[in-house]
Length: 123
Image (cartoon, rainbow, N blue to C red; front, top):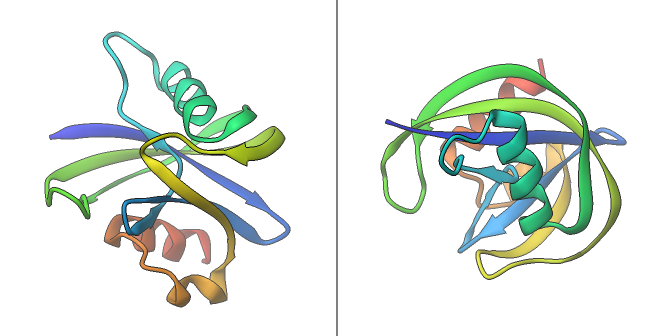
């Protein structure tokens, strides 16, 4: 089972989601080599959301679910975090980003694991 590290970045009661292919997910990704969770998260955020840096990352919870693209089962470790900097560009994997209010999530094609995370955050 693959492990991914994701950030739940919340501002003004909205969460930051990124669009990968046609699906909206939390920013983050899989660790390279011997990277720690926080090293991975810092690298992934800077790659996916150019011009930003992660701050105040604190481990929150772990989730298990299927990836929307390959159907593989993954384990996602979620960190609550802040970002600083200007969101202005994406990489070849990420085609968009949006601040999504909890009530707006139904308007987006969100991965099943991300839906589970959002549901927990709304409690």
